[in-house]
Image 1 (cartoon, rainbow, N blue to C red):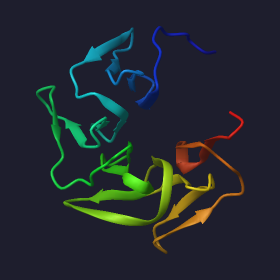
Image 2 (cartoon, rainbow, N blue to C red; image 1 turned 90 degrees about the vertical axis):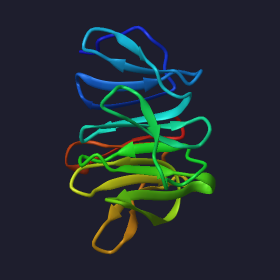
Image 3 (cartoon, one colour; image 1 turned 30 degrees about the vertical axis):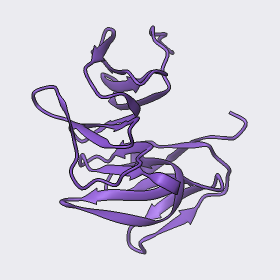
Length: 173
């Protein structure tokens, strides 16, 4: 059964049923505390990501910011610029889409540019990821080959479910 909660959001991400974060149409960031949505002091955001013990926002200024232990967000040094989308894998590593669909991920201390041009990205578990390319084709990351494998569909958005199984939103909604 679906539980209807108050709030209207433009982007949402969840690491578990009790750890969800969202961004509304004005860029305000919210955290679900298990009972209700709580406003969180954060830079105006375009997207939010939670996973692996980390929370990131893609700011409306195109920067990447990470939630610190003291509750404040700080800009991630060395991150790509012009970020529009962010997701986090199960190890807390961000994957971002920047200007013109450029897709990158943080591998420990350095950023790695990945092949392709993306509209959406969902980082999964054990190094897995899914993306929707600029032509609305969902793709699965093949880490062994360092390339994307197309899935037979068209999509506007993608999410990695358990065991990296893809969930998509089609162009028809």
